[in-house]
Image (tube, rainbow, N blue to C red):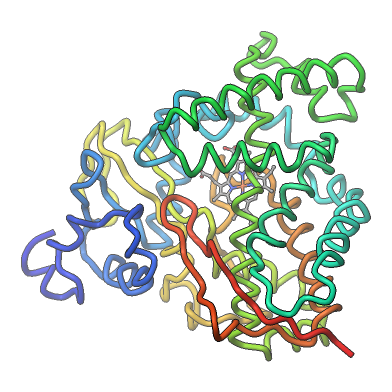
Amino acid sequence: MSKADAGRCPIAALEFAQFDHHSAQHRADAEQVWDAMRAATELPRSDAYGGFYVVTRHADLRTAAAQHKIYSSAQGIALPNESRTRHVPAEVDPPLQREFRRLLDPFLTPDRIAANESKVRAIAVSLLDGLAGETNVEMVSRFTEPFPVHAALAIFGFPSQDADRLNNLVDGLIHGRGSEASIKASQELTAYLIEQLQIRGASADPSKDILAAVAHGSVEGRALSIEDQVSITRLLLFGGFTTVNLALSQTLLLFAKQPELADRLRNQPELFPTALEEFVRYASPGTYLRRTVVADAELGGSKLRQGDQVLLCFGAANRDPAVFDKPNEINLARNPNPHVGFGFGAHRCLGSAIAKLELRIALEEILRRYERVDLDPNDSIAWGEGETQGLTRLPLVLRPRA
Ligand code: HEM
């Protein structure tokens, strides 16, 4: 960015150069930084992690997400990329990625996922029953984090008694990135998933059971390697753990700050389909994902060279005033709502039907039980940083309905 361009932005290029989505202070002023980045005439560039461009405008993000021949996922979608394993199908480019999706997509349509309604509702009810009689509750640890873990285990047919163990392993993986503990957690998880794939491959019908389909699956005419089977299963299970947790907790924070939103949704449940999309737009839990430039290109006023890294900021694109009227406000009836909270293009979220089922059921049960929820005045909320951003603590005062 030239000095003249930087002069037009509320935040100078110098500050963009220090931008780090993993810094603890980032989330606090994220909206302001995103506004400044969107207003720049070139893609803002950070010096962190070997240097990367940030894509914040909705149109630019959709261009990059749609052009996998220029913007590849195959070199990893996290920044920095510390993973030793390839995440399938997220870190595979089309056309191979499409073959993986052909194997998985039929099991995750809204119709097939809807069959899990009663199982998922029973999990929400049981977790909320566990809060009965309590007024001051830290909702992340007590509800929004465990709920999607238990729900995913039920949907994918894993033993429910493994929920806590899996949750701890995921925690070790996410929070101890690159550490010895996280490597150990990853190994334990791999062994567990291989065992589950063997059990299901031997006992279940691959036309009805997604894990059996993976165990018996093939791409490009070859049986899936055990590494790919484990990677797919891992992403199926974990894709929704953090993301649904973050979407749900931010929605509860909205309910606490704007009780009229909760009241309106309770009285007009027909708004759920548009409201759920709006909550995902607003929270954008898949906040930052990386692509690697594999052919020279121009994007957002910048010339990009092969080997450059670009960080797609789904959170910023979802607040782009060029596309969304009053982007920082919630409109429960927003329609159309072309948000990119579930991604865009070939890699669009495989689990969006699961996410929406879980979010709807959790919110319905909370609205049914509680007249209102307030922020606990004697405690404080906390935000996390990184690729998936959102609340790590949400202390609420729960006010049950009469
Ligand atoms: C509110 C919840 C969720 C949000 C916001 C979300 C967001 C996203 C986003 C932004 C992508 C695109 C990644 C990219 O372009 O590189 C994605 C892909 C993906 N999501 Fe989700 N997700 C959610 C829930 C889930 C759930 C419940 C699952 C469980 C099956 C899941 C599984 C996946 C998988 C497997 C991919 C990779 C798809 C591919 O590369 O073809 N997600 N998600």
